[in-house]
Image (cartoon, rainbow, N blue to C red; front, top):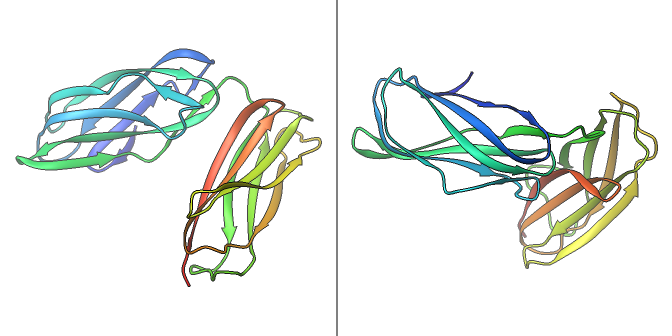
Amino acid sequence: MTKRHPIEYEMSPRSVEAGVRWLTLKLKNLGAEDLTNLEVRLNSLDTQSLDVFGTGSYLSTLKTGEEKEISFQVSAHTTGSAYVTLDGQKKDKPWHWESPALLVSVGKDVAELVSLFALTEPYPILGEVITCEAIVRGLAPSRNLVLEFWAQTPSGKFRSLAKEGMGFLAAGQEIRRTFDITPEEEGIYILHAYLYDGAKRIGHQTEYLSMTI
């Protein structure tokens, strides 16, 4: 089980076939105080990949040292991530906790989109070209992979930046692809990379750029 104080947690299974499935979450209170009136939620980071049914579960008490299990029903489409949130009380005061992202593999994808990263200084300047890099890793031999890059501007526009085929990708092989963007608006840019196997989307990563004058 993984620890993020004061909670030890584990979600299983982490690999499922596509369709409606059940995921089980184990929670253990490692802290010195009891936790009460807990709302436990599993939150999808991408509902097109992994959609969680219901509004969560309720635990009246998770005592120090106590372990409990909660099940969530999900609709699994493609590999995606979710995270757990707990909202309740500790020592009669409001308390919140959340886990890092938990990857759930769905089916047998031929590749994975490992990362999307902007190669820039901490405080990029408006009007300067910024290069971004995505890394794709092969899980099985493939020839039908397509990588798309999009940007959501601070004003809300969503525009295509690049689209390219990946060619042949062997199992275990990593390919890096870059694209350029020249931000012209002040605010937050959200960059998206999408990986497709034919018409099936099998990967999605995001990166954020904070632009100031």
